[in-house]
Amino acid sequence: MAAPTEQRDEGGIFGTQREDLWWVPPTIIAIGFTAFIVYSTWAAWVGEHFFTGLPEAAAAAQGTNYLSPFYSPCLLQGCEHGFLAGVIPLEIGTISPAFFILWAPLGFRATCYYYRKAYYRSYFADPPACAVDEPRDDYQGETSFPFILQNIHRYFLPFSLALVGFLTYDAILAFKFSGGWGIGVGSIVLSLNAILLATYTFGCHSLRHLVGGGKDCFTCDEGDETVAKKSWDFVTFWNENHMLWAWLSLFWVAFADLYVRLVSMGVIQDLHIVF
Amino acid sequence: MAAPAETTQADQPSSGPEEPPRGGQATFEVWRGDEDDGEFETFEVETQPGMVVLDAMHEIQADQAPDLAVRWNCKAGKCGSCSAEVNGHPKLMCMTRLEDLEEGPIHVAPMKTFPVEKDLVCDVSWNYEQNEEIEPFDGRELETPAEKEKGEFRMQQEDLDRVQEFRKCIECYLCQDVCHVLRNHDKYDAFQGPRFMIRYAGVEMHPADDGDRVEEIWDEGGIGYCNITKCCTDVCPADIEITDNGIIPMKERVASEKFDPLAMLWQKVRGED
Image 1 (spheres, chains in turn yellow, purple):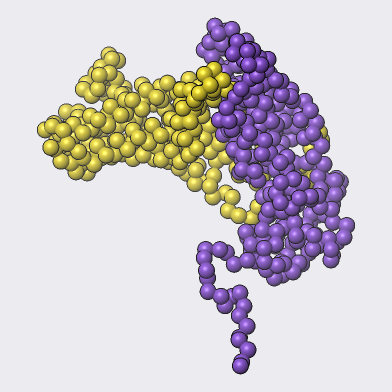
Image 2 (cartoon, chains in turn green, red):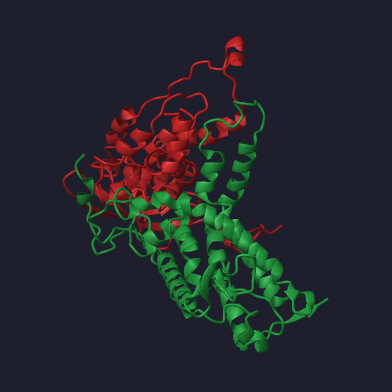
């Protein structure tokens, strides 16, 4: 078919008849993403003040046992946190432990169906908003490199599910202080972090497909509600607000890192009671 | 006895959260033209509370421009005929109330993605051609001994719920209109658009269908061009979750058959290809 869109040139780089503030959501999202990318890159790069259980943080940490989610699980020697500590024969200080971890959540979120929508709109203006013209003509979508690689989203899923487990384990350990079990602000921060990451991960579109969405019929084999149907219903429940969980978990993981960092540095004191 | 004082609607105490209905003089800028050329023409219309944009177009037809071309039918959001762009938003004119619009002149234009026949009427026949290219429903044979004994294939409502959502489509083509792959990039030869992605989903996910359209969805359908920015879902007047329930499940099936070596190996082991 001929291109009918040439009939009505709406003018400008972002031509549209829309008169509402269509540019506000993509701008806010771009600012939010950029802030997170800058902060998380810095936090991963510095390689220190990520664990309040380290000897150098002992004076400031008041017996807390908080590990930043950017660094969990800590795989290097000297971490003394969790059963995977030391599996990589490198000492803390030689390289940031975050580099061994962050590729998994980074890949999972970068190929996530929700985040794709968000950054295609905010960073690539493909499109910037609905019914708003795009600044460039060339477009191949997800049919060619690099965006055809979005199809490997499901390969990051097992690592993200494992991270939910590790962060839950960290959250439990956050209730353990040098004087015994207790509860502190950091325990709550890290628990919420694990919960929010779980709500985001369990609503994954690829997980929804893998647990049952790939089937044409849930009941045809057994004539009754199957495990696949129940699993699909569970994932669908969380999937319905995938965007909300994506943003809450993104914000909270950065906040959790910041909290642990500030406690570890002695900038703030963790409020806690030990039973 | 003195006559009771007349009360106006404005004098009435507010009885709830409802917006006051819009009425009075309104300015409409309506696209007039054909396949070669056109421009916005201004009309002043005396509106009434509760009017929709289609009512205003009919007022203009009746009083000011009897040759204004508008396609409509049911005026109830069910036939999908009166698709247009109101203040730049793809909408059904019959479901767009004036009080829901921003203050100021109201722009009414035909769908940008399809050739204009006249004024607000577009030629949407390209969509009918796409529909004909899709492999239709292919009923499965009776397979299991139980099915053969009963002579029927039985399925539960919960299995049909997924595909029945797509049957709500009224073929207004607003999703096609807003899809930037068609609207901005003119990929008419490469991508069939969101309406037909859910047409694929409706048959491909049907429990009683035996067809396999995954290759077709990638090649002829061009699903790879969709970058799931969800504008189609946003404009759907039937509230179909086009992206989450239709396009993404199809993308995942394509990923399983074309891009996921483990899934392909698993299918080979199970003899599914």
